[in-house]
Image: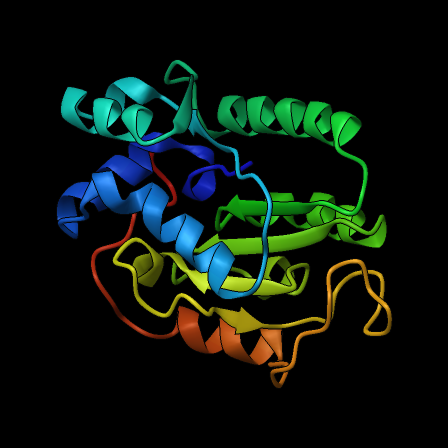
Length: 203
């Protein structure tokens, strides 16, 4: 399960246009990132937001490459967040751990939910924009920078935590790379400039 940044496809639409993202390759890049870090098994991708903010060609590109589009009429960020959380709770009820949850968002409002899922042995994966809050990063085992992921770059991500059930005899295996400090990394990322980002305050 994945949600687009900050729970709204309107922000994603702006990014897809401003950074010339090849929408047809989005599923491929997400899948490649997951496989690069050794995660196997089936993948389901769901996007939440006002689908009408995407061009018809982008809608068709996303749906034809396996992304489920959940349309939420333009009613503000809270509507998209609520829909994502309802779907997430249903997914959790159907998928007990061990299971991987990959969220694409820069919204700190999801931090508490992700930390609770991690404490319940769900392996949290995260992709986010450059302004990601450190408290959100710290819930993830691995984080990718969204601006790089959608271009197929830096697919190995940054490792912040060992698997949620511990480093020894874990259901999820053992990460054989040095762990980075999410508070140091995410604060550094937020201070850098990059390609035009989705507007976190608009709908």
